[in-house]
Length: 285
Image (cartoon, rainbow, N blue to C red; front, top):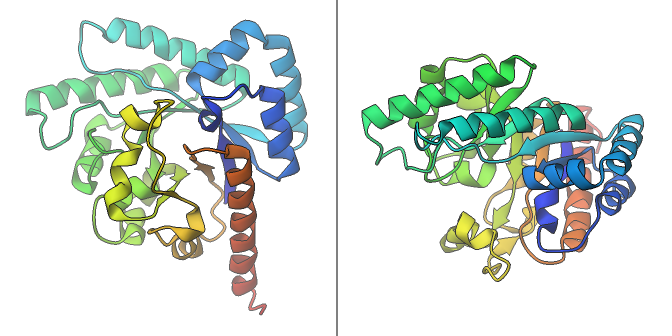
């Protein structure tokens, strides 16, 4: 596994991109997941300095793992603006050297959407995939509550309905846990389409609502109940053992306070787990 930090963790702080890169370098992160608005601002206001940092990162084996944004598919009336936004994200992704753009499959739960509306959503996602494919960009749909990828059956159906080779999944472990059942079994089912992971954890099941967008994006949102990966309700050690050494990125999606301090603890723990997996593979005790 390769591990990335998310610039969204620093959304409420005055932290420069060079500072984030230096932190990633020092603590042996493999990549940085870039929030779309951060990429936009760097391109517009700090392009030359950012290009220097990107070259430095590449030389050291650190990459931009994914560009994360939201492409609205809610209405045909607004879809022209969505296509323009998609074109802008493609430009930013190519500038930053990544082949992945993350989005969501709408903002309507799969159980509440009509068949006709679902067909429209699918058509729009396919058009976005076509747009991205011209430049070799994968469109990564995140598994997330309140979307067409909010349970296993709907997610599988969505992949089939869109039917595009470059449509892939961001396997958010906690949101998959919300499906119910075993995370590992869901992963095996979705594995052919998984091209990225999000790792986060909670202390108790009743804490799950703290990750609703209206809360996590708010500067004054509730952060109680967020947990370190190795200390929460979800058994990440078990999941990492199953993943083994698969060569994909997992981003540490921390929305709480003290991101530098927490991410340092998280990456240290993850590196320790990797050593344990390797030792077990070769029978080293």
